[in-house]
Amino acid sequence: MTKTRFFALAIAIMLSSHGCGANSTPREIFQNVTATYKSMQTYKAEGTIISDTERPRIKFSSSDTDWPGRKFSSETSFGILLKKPNLYLISWTQRNTRGGTWSGAVWNDGTQAYVYVGVAKAYYKVSTDERAFGDARTIPLFMGDVMSSDRDTIALLFLPGLKEPRDPFSRMDAPKIIKTEKVEEDDCYVISGASTAYGCCKETWWISKLNHLIRKNSCEPPSREQREEYSKRLSARMGGNWIFSEAEWKGSITELHMRISSPELSKKDFQFALPEGAVLRSEMSLNDFQLLRPELWRPEPLRPKGEGAIFGPETK
Image (cartoon, one colour):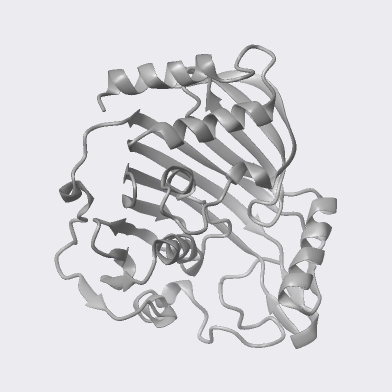
């Protein structure tokens, strides 16, 4: 599908959808977003993720274990290629204040799903696409990121073959259109509300008025009341009694999608170009990160009473 045909189709969807005028509700706009990605056959975009966050100390009373608070700032550039029903290539490079620069990728060219971890100079076969996307969310946490972005949001809306597709909008409570604003030259609805993303936060979406594509997403830390509710949910899910310190979460994480198109793509386009020296390993291990990047870790991965928790250095 050419770019011209793609935008023509998007406009047709917008005009034929119920409630597309000035009085559209957030839920109607989100429904149109879902319909737009469902109608597309390919998707290509570039983007950035800006993260500047600080997490308070967490105490886990049942085992007398602390996770120390930590600060993290990073800028991630990424590229996305998608084609129905199950082809994808998402690659990224992150520059952060704690560990320099590292890269990663997840891809499936129709034969096998893979994950590449630049810091380990290795790539791994994974059994399912869901596992590949799960690893893509987990890797930044291994690298010290406080609030890892869901850089697979578009893929989860786009790919019909995923066994457990997620609706990112269902996690929002009473979203409201707060204003309209341009992203590049694109007029966008700005929709905001409480969300369970990253446990709990204030989440905001910038949705194109022209074609109902997601242009931008951001999350800000939760209020004290939201943090207490998250503690209850985490305790119920994990067992024990998780208690956040009195210090508030600080910072934000913002994801921006640019240069969006719907080009013709073949399977060859989804073959990730492995860097020289990358080796195939049987599975991803925490040791890949501890041994190769010891400056990001304390000597012991986890121990009681707060002086050896996974990520350091801690904040008071």
